[in-house]
Amino acid sequence: MLVEGNHSAHLYTVLFGLGFRYKLMVDGRRQILNYLLPGDLIGLQGSLMGEMQHSVEALSPMLLCVFEREQLHTLYRNHPGLAYDITWIASREEQMLDENLLSIGRRTAIERAAYLIAFIRARAAKVQVGRSSAQLPITQQHVADTLGLSLVHTNKTLRKLAEKKLIVWRDGGCEVLDIDALMKLARWERLQETLRPLV
Image (cartoon, rainbow, N blue to C red; front, side, top):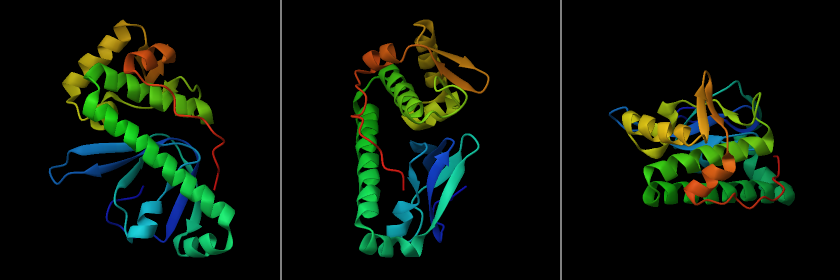
């Protein structure tokens, strides 16, 4: 969809669907940075830095609202309420990235996997993504690329979660069976929920 290093005349709000932001190393290894759900902004970083600092890929069909990037300064000047909403969304993104960094730096592999699945599931349920908010359209490779684990290690770790009857892998993704137990295992409490602005 969007590629790191490109200049885009637009930024986008996700209205429907699920995607992810990622960076590629020169040898092709991928690090998934975060998952995009309805209400999230895409391309704000590029608006300020001049070019995309990451790539974006869809996990399901997505519907995006398109904004002219050059109008961002006008929006901040003439619409302080919307400017505050954009700042709120950027701040929320920073909060989520902090939690993800904590997970990669300090949680064990099984805690990381439990956190990631609970995190995406909690966000998806809030905005009602997909046929069932309990079913996430991610693969084990997505989990591995997010957690910085090998695919073999990821497979073994996810099998442990399945044996505990917390998740089950089905065609098209991962189904969450017990989000509360996932959160407890990950030692994670949901993000504080406040009314999220939609820009």
